[in-house]
Image 1: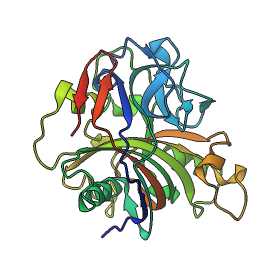
Image 2: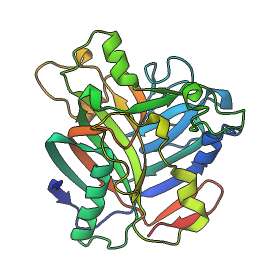
Image 3: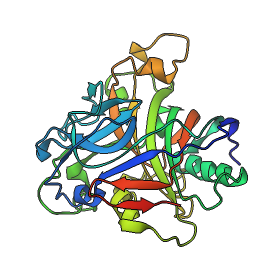
Amino acid sequence: MILLAESDLRKNIQNAEVLLIGDVRDVLYSRAETVVALPNLFHGVGVCGEDDPITTGEGIVVRGRAAKTSPDPDAGVKVDYLTSSKGLYSPFLIGWNAEPSFTTQFSCESGISLTQVYQAIFQDIRERKLRQDHKYVFVEMLASFKPEDIFDRALQCPVDRGHVLTTSTEHFARFFKTRIIYHDLINRSASLDTLVPLCVVGMAYLCDKPVKVVAGLNERVFYPPPLSAKPALPDAPSDHAGNQILSHSHALGWRSEQLPENRLCGLDELLEYHPDYLVHLDDWSVMRSATVKIYLAKEIRFNIGETAQVI
């Protein structure tokens, strides 16, 4: 049982302004030939680059700051860090502007998978009767991970051509680097006993029963995690909570060598340091503790002029 403790619930649940640009399927099927200029966003997760689609790689927006990593052999470890999302272009990104609906903290010595965190958030929302049938949450987390528990990946090949399924067994290794943070720390002979702080930005969908969704929202944002990325370990975390949770999460990470010694940094302080990593974080990654800000929304606006109700 995961307990979400110290919850600070706002009396008036604010509805996040959510904007969906493009379609994740264009990235998945390496056909992302068109990019759209990003507006200023407070949070966002997707892919981005310059105004040339060939530059599109993993991207993230955290508290107004943006980061991107190019789709090449340095993907995930060479991070461009920007003061805003303005000036970036994307074939797919979901972003939002809002104050959090509530904030919560937890810790667990044995670890909690990313999927389990999302599942606990939905359970917390329902138990507090905030929105009984709410199906989507948007989150910002500052979480601590053991290096061996981070299962990440990043595009290392452009997705503007080819028209093949990048996550298929046949093509996965060509398009994605995996276990980026873990292998980088090993290559640097860094301690694997030190917890790694990751700032996670993501969105999750609870698919425990059928629900009408306008404009193909789920297909544009979520996709099953590739089996090729899942750890082949006997004690690997369970997948997708019985397929009830679909999520899409990216993360910034920092090595301990550039951070203050003997104390933890809050997220605002961490964001003053250039991040060492930018990755897509898979659902079976396991964290030891986290502070989570949760955002709720009633509708999502599409850059093509549609609006989808998400309750």
